[in-house]
Image (cartoon, rainbow, N blue to C red; front, top):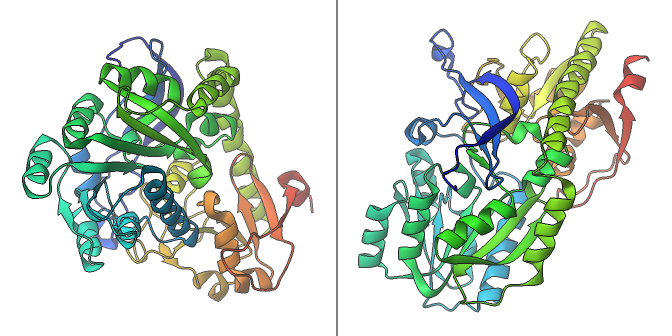
Length: 429
């Protein structure tokens, strides 16, 4: 981001496979590539970043299995994003909204429902086909100058360019922002949204580290970076999606008044010590302790004859399984709602992926919630599992068993109160 070379490594999660490289049965005996998963911080600008970058051609062009609209919480989030952006920017039906890394097009659907002209750009061909079936025009491309030239010729300048959970995936950020600047109208706005480094560190969200996430973003390095691009952060908003994210509003320098939220978040980052080596070293030590505690819990339950399965198979879950060495000897299977993953095997650990109903059919005792960021909704969807006595294990920020406090079925949008129990009290019973 700043071209600095003074990098200080603060966590090493070993060599892991690509988090979204789910395997077919006929691929299980083939060689499986593993890559180093280490994060360093730039001592000049403060950006946390991977020390090894995997080619995007490998990451996104090979049968990509991620869908951004599987959960109701996710869909509500994207609807709020579109509604609030349209209101804040006073967009009209003449305005063009471009979403980079648009996935299945749900966010753009929400903008289109607000009357905007929309276009998605995404490099994953199978995902693009899903978006097109939804009626969202999507170009099967990596975003760059050649795409911008075509957009300007066919669509004109964009009033709004969005990149949700995409900006942190980009290696060559300066080239990326040059293309965004060319695409934006004079008063246009670029909005990026991504998990915040502060939540990763403070809530021990180490499983959000995987090869697609090249950077682990915070405000301080972004302010410096956008300044060098003749652009300016004029607003910052916090969101609770994905364990704690922030939404950054960027324009050409001087176009909009800078809100107090920018100064306030920068002060919070400094107070939290996100750029201090001892704080990051303590984070790494806690991650190692988490791995040991989770392994003890799962091995103890297995020794007592309990059946354990994983619930959901997000990319973050694959980091957790591989770093903690949790394989089929501990988890009988992993369940999923996404048809793109059911019937496959998890990368590295090779655990079969089944449908959610398998939890009840196989009389599972404990479900390890790999998508802990959607725990309330997932637990609400698994009422039958809970009714037959099934309990849930949350792995982050520390492994613990939780049980629902109410047995009546709730809508997935309703908050679910959970009773937490320290894992040590469970293993002693």
